Amino acid sequence: MTKSTTTYWNALSPASREHWAAIKDLEQMAEELTLSVDQDTGEYTRLTRFFPGADTTAFGGKTHPYPEEVFIVSGRLYDKAFDIWLEAGHYASRPPGELHGPFKTDVGCVVLEVSFPNRVGDSAVAQPGAPAGLCDKAVQPR
Image (cartoon, rainbow, N blue to C red; front, side, top):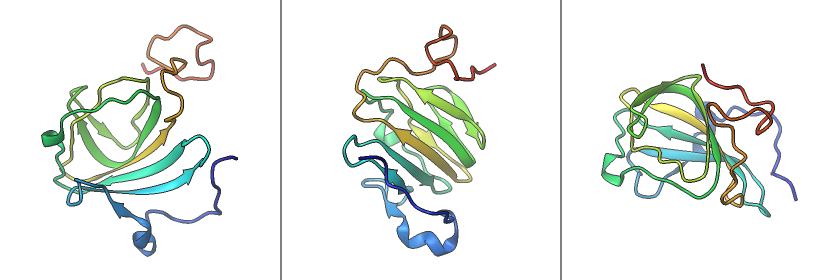
């Protein structure tokens, strides 16, 4: 089976509000919308919306044993693990086990996440300074 598909629709439109769901334990801080999922592999594409003033410091940072990609769609989000304010256009391809968060935002933020939970321990993820050929098409940050 492959990831689920859909025709064009605007996930950020107020008309799509009903499709978003609160994130457990972060109900007053964030919500999510799964855009596509592969039921066989568990791979998914999801939007996470952090509300203005959200702060996950009480939950600490997190790691997981699989790779994921994140792209900041709008707003800005502070990642304490990297001591950086991420703004629209920031992208990361996280290797398994990489610490990220906790997060906070002053103005709110929408993050696009592509996760690969069945690729546990997959080390073929683009990393700054990775040798050529590891991810041939990866664009390295400057």
